[in-house]
Length: 66
Image (tube, rainbow, N blue to C red; front, side, top):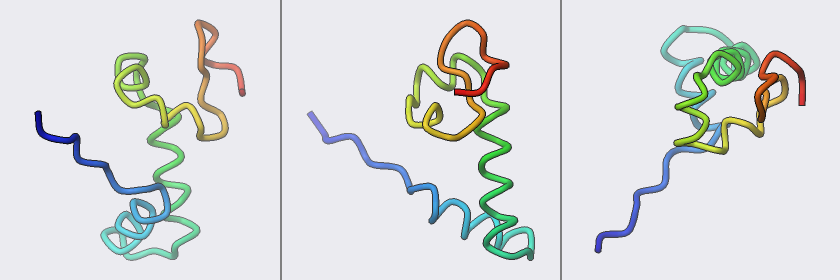
């Protein structure tokens, strides 16, 4: 079987978002974090790394921090 391709990391994604939006790296990080916080339960199940972002719920009470 083919090895799964690893996706880009948080900082690389933030840099890409910042470049695309024409804003600073800090704003790029905010864009990526906001997207992770809005991610659906299905997306978090497929990509558990999304739960590492502050403000993303891990269990049923997804609106809570932690």
